[in-house]
Image 1 (cartoon, helix red, strand yellow):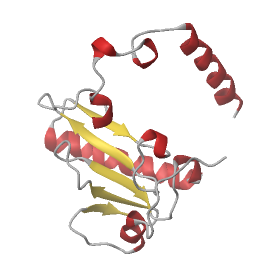
Image 2 (cartoon, rainbow, N blue to C red):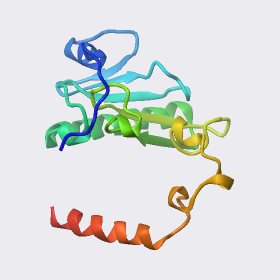
Image 3 (cartoon, rainbow, N blue to C red):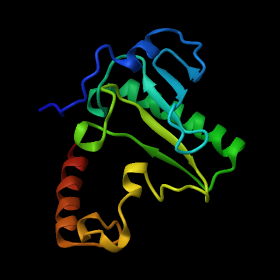
Length: 161
């Protein structure tokens, strides 16, 4: 079953990745990936790593592409740590419209975080959740029976693969 995806024709990231781009936001590239500065700078230095081949979600990447994306993310993260001295670096990625994916092309956000951030811990859409009104299933610190059952189920399948 495929995840519902946003509609975009032509795919903006495909056009960027297809060319050996020298665009203003290209930071690095290799045969499989392109690392760019995100045009939306929720944090100074926020980047994205994407595969050159059109792959809508993480499930559509092959193993070589997935490894190349992580290697590029690691490289840009090292640069961020050296250059920005952040408090941390956030990696996040959305799969399907239900997760907030806006472009139907896999891309991994790499975000240096600073104490002056105004979007809390996590991506901007998570920052809108207020802890006082957060139900237990949305509270990362609350351990519930449902969460334990989910972990057990996922762990069984993860180990089996």
